[in-house]
Image (cartoon, rainbow, N blue to C red; front, top):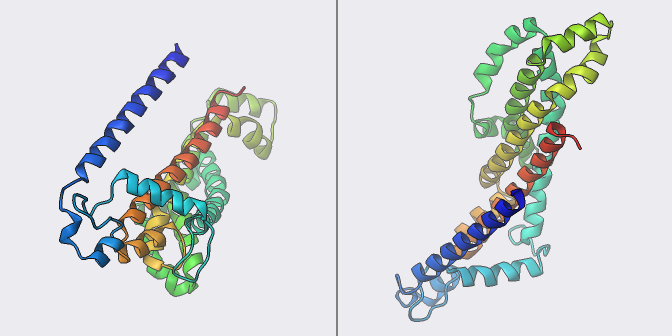
Length: 279
């Protein structure tokens, strides 16, 4: 039944994708013809300056350009001309660094909050004040104090990844069944051993849920952050291609951002299934 449902879902997805691509192809034919543009502007827009084609590139144009970019994704011709693979690598590295720092801070503090009602009440005002602040609002302060755009981007990822993990960890730890904790106390299990042998396995699904939410937010924010600070990264690539009026490359970057975000989410979804339903 499950396999049959998966196959049917795959077929429906392919049909929807085909319908979307067909609609896109038809919509970009003959609407706002490229003959109304100068040849130079048509070239920058990624459209062919011929009768019957629109300024917006169609799926065939995007596919051809995507193949061209993927054939040599790691070229480096200067500060403003790097392959999409290099740009993507910089973004993933920044997200990875900021995310790992958030894991190292959020999970221990979440355990502390979840296990100690006193610390929960004491830290709650700070969390409630800092949590709603947009991560990008920290960027000017980070640039002023750190004076390095790349490290500032990592700091912003750290900030935006921190709160979902911290709150979910605290909730998961505080929600562990009291009976299990009472048994551990009866057996005179120490605090640290109790945290690792009783609380962590019970709270793991909730903790990983927070980590999954955080990675999605981190990948979302890095694109906006790189648009602000420039230099390298997939966000900078999007902004630079827009400045060059290359809508084809902008569409490709959006597609790449979506695919990488999906892969990051699915990786943590796999971890979540393992800790929820261990094999």
